[in-house]
Structures are given as structure tokens and as C-alpha cells.
Image (cartoon, rainbow, N blue to C red; front, side):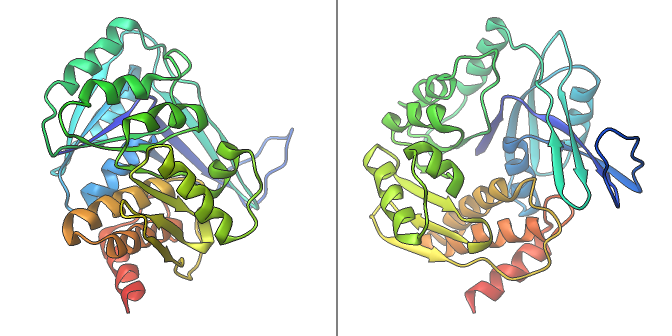
Length: 303
């Protein structure tokens, strides 16, 4: 079973404006509401690829109820921890000449609530996959992902990590199966500026030396680079197409595609290309991409 953990999910409220003026009343011409959070995005894309998975998340209030309702489908098993106070955050996304976001902070997670998550992790068994994606809420310790990985470290669970600098660094000693920094996160991690693909590869090898088994670096419109567990370098260019949105879900989609690819094809090259196909399909879509678009792009990459 694949499990995703989302510590701070969201309800994403997107407004479309022909023109946005700061300090004035602006009227949207269209709007949309969807659930968000990196782990839930991974779960959603896996579901659209017909892969059953379990979504573990903290939720609260009326927005938490919306998330619970939206997760009710044939391929996602919601395993939610309901908090007594506050409400799941609302992220406001403005689509105009430029894309802007205002992200909420989210509810307080108490120690007793946190312990409920670890109780859920007791059911994981050898061969399961655990995906940790997103930032750690300010009410939890920054090394929280390390605590999670340590709790399953004796079960031969395949762990995927996609998070910020220090939280990522804390997990590397546990040899996660996959980490997925983007170019900016790679620059921030090593405090350098990256100007060429050779530097990306060099720094990715640095993360492998620190403990990661596989390092997948997303490069936006330039595709992705993978350093696999055998230290082989794989590159895949992005597909050309009409960009619809660049703010939500492309990296999460890439993780879902890679895990789908490695499980189905048992091949790093094909897994990388499926990851890139999923990421590009998201960028070319309004929201997370559907299965047909993903496979159309994957087939075009494989030609």
C-alpha cells in the first residue's frame, strides 16, 4: 500500500481576474475550489492513475469536512485525524497577468493529536511506501519527518521525502528511497547558484552521499534529472505545450508519476519519464491532470 502524509492540508480557493490592482476592489470573472496540500496532491494523481492509496492528514473545522468529502473515491482511502480546534487552512490563489498566492497557517496540532498519527503508522508493513510531502507546521518540531521515518525504520518501508532544507537534511541519515528537490531548493540546500546541468548533477550526487538512495531534481520547463540508486544519471526534457498554471501540483504530480512508473515498469528511465509526463500534464491543466493527458504526454516522450 502507498501512504501519503499531509500535515497541513488546505482548501485552495482560486480566483481568475483579467487585471489585478493592489489596494483596490478587484472582481473575479471565474473561481474554483479544490483540496490541496502536497501529500493530498500526490494521492489524487495516484488515484487518477488508478493506484489505490491511503491519505493520512490532519483536518479541522468546516474546511476539514470538505477535504473528507472530496477524498471519497474508489482509489483513495481517507485516514484523517480530526482536530478539535481551528480549521484547515484556506489558500487563496490569484490568476491574473501574474500568479499570486496567499497561504493560510493552519490549525494547532497538539501532542495528543500527533500521537494519533504514529498510531496509524503502526499498521505499515514491509513493502509499503510512505510519502512525506510538504512543509512541517510551526506547531510541530522541524525534525518531525525524522521521527516519522524512525518509527517505521525497522519495517522495510520505502520512504519518499519532499520538503524544505533542514527538514530534508534531518531525514537523510535514514536513507530515504527517494527525495525530490527542485532547482531552487537545491540551491538553497547548498547555498549556491546553479547555472548549468552539470552543477545540478554534482549537487544531486552530494545528496546521495548524505544518504538518499535516489535523487530526483525537477527543473521546471527544462524537465528533470535523476541520480538512481546505482549512481546512474538519467535526464528527461520537459514536453512543450501551452502552460495553464505553474503554482500548484507539478512537483507532487512528478512524485506520483515516478512511483507509478517504478512500480509498474521496474525501470528508472521509464519512471523518470512518467514523472515528467505527470508534471507537464499538471502545468498544462487547470488543476491536477487527468489520466488521458498524462499518458498522451508519456507516450510522446517515449517515442
